[in-house]
Structures are given as structure tokens and as C-alpha cells.
Amino acid sequence: MAWALSRRYEKSEARRRLAEGIRGRAARAGEPGAFHETITAAWFELASGVEDLAAHPELLDRELLARYYSAEALAAGRDKWVPPDLHALRLPPPPAPAVADLFAVMRRLPAAVAVLSTRAGPLSARAALGGPPPEPARPHGTVHASTVSSTAAVSRTPPLVSVCLANGSRTLAMVAEARTFTLSYLAFDQADLAARFSTTARPAGAEQFSGVAHHLSSYGPVIAGCALWVGCHLEQVHPAGDHQIVLGRVAVARSDRQRLPLLR
Image (cartoon, rainbow, N blue to C red):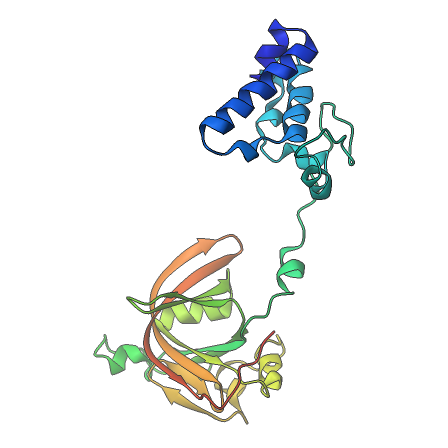
């Protein structure tokens, strides 16, 4: 509309008509405060200055003004014109800012720390629950554990939890084979175990648990003294970028209310 009006009217008149039209639509929608003087004027300046809209697909980017204005400048420009503080209003636009390191940002949020454990082979829950005959026991690698902090309760009915596991990881392969796993949510004084099960230098198989107090449930090993733990059947696996989102259907959940959880 800004482009069409600028082709029909003198620039100041086209801009006035655009603002008047948007104000009217906002008022009829019952949201008169939705009109933003600076956003309207900035979009008009960008769109009205081009001859061929098709040659400027960046004008379809709803976040385009973030390349010209800081959030603070736009916030100050609702009722009055505020000039851009990052870049002059001209096309082509400046490059989009680099995406922030997601983990550097999310690291500020506290997250529970758990050890995911699983066991494939003769003592897996497949056999315990009447599944197919287990494979012959292997001397190594039947047990695996890894520290995780990307877990969440997903559903109450059915009871589901999620955990994100890296593509190609040993943990993901073992969970897919065993079809069961446990999540031992560590207590506040078990940070050493979080470090133990996250290092790539840890031994393979059952030796990972050497010297670590635990018991073997039908779903995998459970760390003794943890704040809480859940035992799960593998429900679904969904690809998500460089990880897979693993959904587990919770079959057992236990907690020790006297043990506060460890937070990252």
C-alpha cells in the first residue's frame, strides 16, 4: 500500500494517507493504540523509494526494521518520528545481525541436571516385560550413561518426558536399541557425577559405574542418592537440527523430598 500510494500522490500526501488508513483500521478493530508512528513512516520510506517491488524481496521480511533500529529506539517512536539509530533508511539493507550463540544465552537459565542411563541386552526391560528373547550378552557396551540437562515434562496423560540427544551419539544409539532408559536427576551435592558422566574420557560400558552407588532397575541403572528418577519406555524420536528429541513414556517415578536437585 505504501508503494502504491507513493506512485499516485506526492510523497508527503502519500505518507499522510497511509498513516490515516492504518489509524482508521486500528480504531475499527478496537485497538487504536496499535498505530506506531515510526514503524509506519520507516516502512513507507523503504517501500516508496523502489521502482520494482519484486526486485526487493527483503521488504517481505517482517524483522527488517531491526537492521535499522534498536529495540529502544523503536519503543520511543510510537507517538513521534524517531530516526534510525543503527543504519540509514535505504536499500539494500545492512546485513542481518549474526544469530546469538543459543547456548550462551540459554546458559543463564537454571536447568535440572540428570544422568540418562540405559542397558541393552539380557537385563533390559524388553525381556522383563515379555518382549522378544534378548540378544546374547556382550562383554562391553551393554550399559551406557550420559549427563543431560535438556529434559522436560511433556504430557500428563499419557505421562511423557523429553530429552535431547545428539545425532550419532552413543547414548542415542543405546536408547534406540534398549527401548528403555532412566533419568536420575542429580542432587545438589552430586556435581562430581555430572562431570563424570559428561567427560569423553570416561570408560565404556559398565565400568562407567565403577565406584558409583546405583541399582539396576528394569529400565536401566539409577544413581543412588539422586533427588528423583524416572524409568521410561521409548515412545518416539523426532529429528531436530543437530539433535533428536526423544520422548519417553514414564512407567515409574520416584523422588526423595529431602534431596534438593542440582541445577546447571
